[in-house]
Length: 367
Image (tube, rainbow, N blue to C red; front, side, top):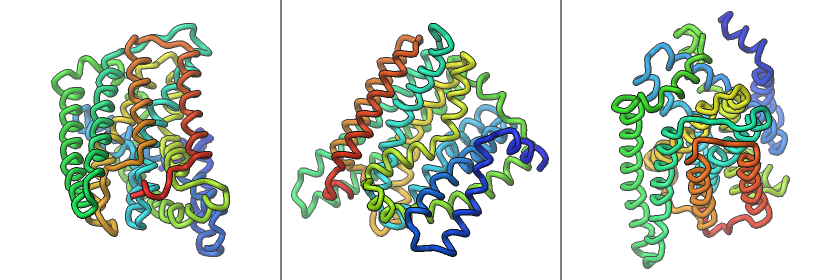
């Protein structure tokens, strides 16, 4: 417990944990104050995501590379997964799909771009291992093609189109999970030497005892679930008040909040000229979302949702994911970066954010 308290004292981001009891109390006292609850929930999720990240890294260090890699694949995006499952249960499929697409774009453009920019402002040119970037980019490209495929089924007659889309999405979900499992086997077992620099970079962070890490993981998971329920219940009313569509909230707000902890680590690594770690976090997290979180949500929708969810995204989301994936592939192919490359990635992300805010997708594309 002393290790946890010391971590909180020395990490300003974790001081925001005070907002966790604040939002839980506010939900009891003023349940109709949706905008207040929305803001408090967003702020409260950020330090909880940071604690999840610390606990996961600590357990990974103790269990070794193979089990630790699988654990990171499962829990690395736990915050987004919990929010999405809560939204699934509430039938907010537009929010779920927007958060999936937004997480992929945010990680591959915003997180990667900001890492390049922050590192480039300190170092003239930075170099990193291209193997990880190439693998994650290839996985993202394959997942994006899978997201494009259900659009073809949507052109069928209404009597059969919806059922075929759901069955097709279920088959794609299973295929993506298998592909992600093979990528873990490739990077953690058969060709792990290609990714050695990434493993060295991630091993320094976790210093907690294993019992503390497991206990923290359990408690924080429960708290994230409680806060996520408040977030989902308030998001519609708050978004209307603030002039934001559910697509914008999921694509931008949820994605940025869920990745806050990972961004802090990636940005810090870039400033220390350890860009291997930054690229691995950014593109690795994006590929986790595309090949693990998204298909798991499709499977879970059969259990917790009012009806099965498909992988048919609105055209703008698929276009943005495709552009982000191709851009990330191009910029990471050389194994070198400078600050201006990061700035260009951030400009592309800003264009997407402005487009979603000013021209939100129609309701016909929400399910």
